[in-house]
Image (tube, rainbow, N blue to C red; front, side):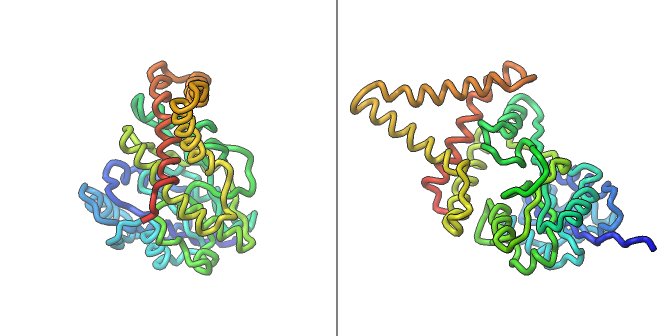
Length: 320
């Protein structure tokens, strides 16, 4: 007798995603997995063509369901979609990414064989144009983002967090879903609770998802400021979840500020610290292989934008 495949529901938070939603939905509809029962879009207030695109796709495939997310918050939208989901597993897909054709099939094989509470993979940043490509290289560099495997890959196995997520629905609901008080880092916080509950968060490098990074300095700086700001809230909620990589950016900001002050008050020798940081940026920008000179020059600005914005967000962000 043929074994029935587990049913899955895709949950997708959507807001101002006109430029990327078509690719996200097309990649979801073109999955090799046979038991995708629902594709639930939680659409927040948008001032572009997002709702029209979503409605057009809904008319082409009855599995697509649209619900309103008045708050526009990612965690709220995901929880609202999860409440309507009927599948045994919840597949998180974001509206700015593309999942490969076998993504869901591979994820279900992995989560059923490992018994994990959540399975995810790599955020494969891919840019268009020199600046976005430079950001993509920075996002896949240990110097840029630390030692989290979901940015650059690694061996399959347990992890503190993963990109996106394929959740066992029963466990997701038992734990109360995403913390809606968090604007960002709600995935990391939920993964912490999954691990505290004695379940595994499993990293599978075969689950590589194409991600479009920010395309300008303002957007990148704002994004990483928010990352730092909300990471502080997550750490305040559960200090035991703190990782060394999360302390480095705020420590870097404080050390650089202190060295500048000390150089003026006491001795110019303290300027060796910011100069050492600049030298490290130059080295990191030069050793990345197969990129253009223009991208290397942009990396000299992209790396500190990411580091310092994250660190400042952590230090002064209020979490409101």
